[in-house]
Length: 607
Image (cartoon, rainbow, N blue to C red; front, side, top):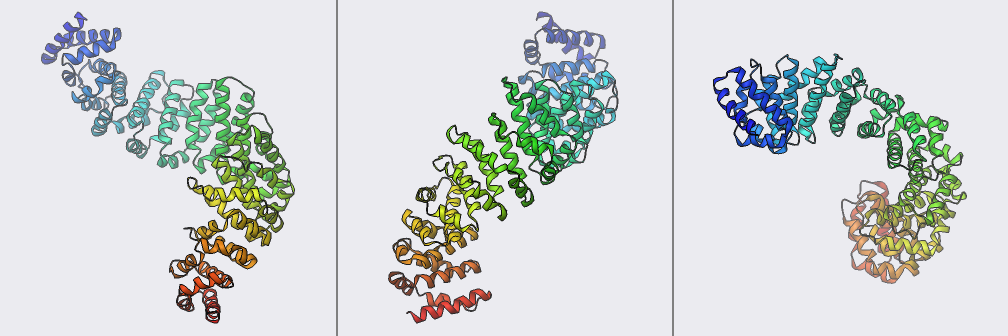
C-alpha cells in the first residue's frame, strides 16, 4: 500500500505537468493495487483526492484514457465510490470518450459508466444529463451485425451499461424505448445467439423493459416470440430456462404477443417441460413445472390464442391440458382447471366441453379436494364450472350431472375466494331453472349460510354474490316454499338493503324478488318489511331522479303489492306517495308513466 500512496502522490504531480510516461506508470500501479485489494485501494484513492484529477486524463488524445477509464470502472464496483465519481466530474469526459472509435477505449468507458450507474440515482442522472445513453444505443445499432469475439464483448458491456442505467427507473426505460433500443436488442438475440454472455445480458435487459406497458407494442412489432422460443429450445440448464421464462411472463400479458408465442411453438416447449418435470422431486423441477403451467394458462387468457389452441375441442394442446385434471400433482390440477376456465369463455366452447364430459372430471377433482382442501384448486375448479354453466343449454345437463350437490359440499368453507365462486356457480346454474331454484331455495342450510354471508362486510364480493343468489332463488323458482325459507332464515332485510345498492342490476334483482315475496306471502313477510323500513326505501327510490326507469317501475309494482297489509298501507299513506307517483305520470318512459297512472289509482282508491 505504500507503493500506492507513492504512486498517488506522483500522479498528482504528473497530472499537472502531463508527462505521459510517469502518468502511465502511476496508472499501472493503481490498476495493480485495485486488482490486489479493490476496496482498500479505492478508499485510499478517495482519501488522497485523486478522483478530481482524472477528468484531465480522460481526453480522446490521451494514450492512457482506456487505463484511466478502467481504474474508474474498478473503483465504481464499490457502492461508496459511485457518488464521489459523479461529484468529481467524471461523467462528462467519460461520455465524451464514447465518440471514440477505439475498441479498448469504448470497452473501458462502457464498463466505467455501467458500474457508476449500478443502483445509483446520481450516476444515472449524470449520464442522462450528459447524453450518454443515446451514444451507447447508436454504437449497439452500428455494431449489431459484427460477430467477432472482441465486438461481442463490447456489445455485452454496452447492453449491461444500458441495463444498469435504466433498471427499475420507468422514465429512463421509456427514454431507451423511444430511442428504439428494443428492435435493436431483439436483433442482437438473433445474430449472436451462440454467445451466452451477450444473450443473457439481452434477456436481463428485456426483463427490465418488458414490465413497461409502452414496451409491449414495440416488442410485438419484432420477431421476439420466435427468438425467445428458439433460445428456450436450446437451453438445458434450469437457471437458463428460468431466465427466458422471466422475459416470457411479462411479454405474454400482451394479447398480440400471446398469439405470436403460440404460433412460434411455445406451447409445445411448455408441454415438454411439464412432461419432464411432473414426477420430479427436486426443487428446480417443481419450480419449472409451476412456471411452465402458469405460463400456459396465461397464453389462454388471449381470445385468439385460446381459440387457436382449442381447435374446436380437437386440439392436441386442449386434450393434453384435460389430462392434467385427474393427475396427482396439485400444480397440474390447478393449471388444468384454470385452463378449462379460460377455454370456457364463449358459448361454443362451453357447449362442446359439457357435451364431451368435462364436467365429470371437474366434479371428481372437487370431490378429491373436499377433505384435503387445496383452496387454489377448489377455486379454479369452481371457476371452470361457473363459466361452463353460462350457456342456457348447459344448465340442465350440469344439474343432472350433480354439479349443485358437489358444489354444496363446500358450503362450510371459510375461504372467501371459494365462497365467492361457489355462489357464482350456483347462481349461474339456477338461472331460468325453476325446479333447481326451488330445490336449492328450500335448502335451509344454504339459506342460513347465505344470510350469514350477506353480512360479510370485509368481503364485498361474497356479500354481493350472496344477495344476488338469495334474490335469484326467489326470482327463478317463483315458489311460496322458497319465499317462506328465505323469510325463516332472515333474508328479507338483506334484500331490502340490496335494493339500495349502487349497482342498478342488483337493485332491480332485489326489487323483483321483494315483489314476489309480497305477492306470494305478504302475511309472513309483513313483520320483516316493517322492520327493514321497506316503504321508506321505496319512497327514496321513487323520489330520486337518478333512479333508472326499471327501478321506478318495479318500486311502484312493489308499493301496490304491499297495500294489502294494514301496517304497510299506513306507512304508505304517511309518506305522501301520491305526490311522488303523480309526478311520474309525466315520465318520458311510457312503461313508467303507465305504471304511475295505475299506482295513483290504487293509492287513491285505498286512501
